Length: 334
Image (cartoon, rainbow, N blue to C red; front, top):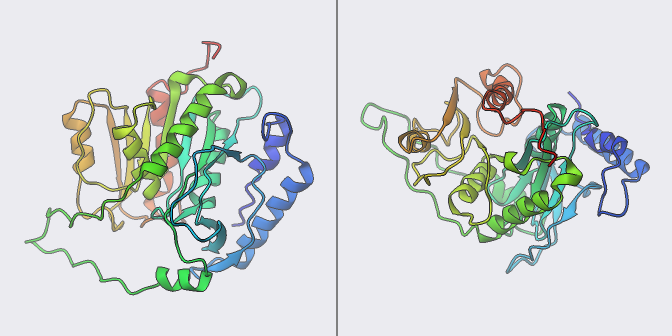
């Protein structure tokens, strides 16, 4: 199925400002859609292909600085038909606003995944934001700074395809045994980017129709890790809810005022490993938590892949938001 990311064209209908003074040029937006349509048609496999950087007409620079020891410029590639960005040294935020008259005041920061080395901008960013906007939710795709990778795409592809040890097969003696600890990463850049995104949404809340009491964050894989990191460590973000989607499952120290959490993972995801630590942590802290463990779906499924039980998670997420009052019509005037 072709992906065109027509939200950029739709945003023209509401005259979304690009930088506060100008608006999207329609020809550029249509060209962006056509480029991604060609990408979808030509590359529906796991091979890494070069991709010219697409236009990002709504991207707003966050001005959080660069990346130390980053010799390579930002570049793009495509895999599984999806556009991916790497060597990101300048963070941006792209708004996806609901059609006029459909906004309910809720807002979500969307953090794509990619192991903090690349970002799955289509599958875990623009597509998700489009879907949220159709539900009346103002969505904001965060293109956060990444750790450096090889400048040459071939070298990067070799690194991506390097042999990795197979995970041990489960046995009676290993059932319930925590996986080995993961390498700890310094996520100070990424946290600054998330904080800047949140601050920008608060600053322009009236313009974008956002209720500042209903700003949440959802992330995928590494983006789920960033969502959790921001929840546990930020001194400036006051997230109303969070949605870590197929993120790490290890236990954490939960603040007393931690936001309600909606979490999703599949049993055939390498990050699961039979662990429920983060869910148990939220539960024992007495904070609202909803958890969906799906029979299959693998890792990186975004909104869903054909014939997988995980494909209905987004519907469940919207229902969860609704039941918890986050989608109530905005009557506060914010």
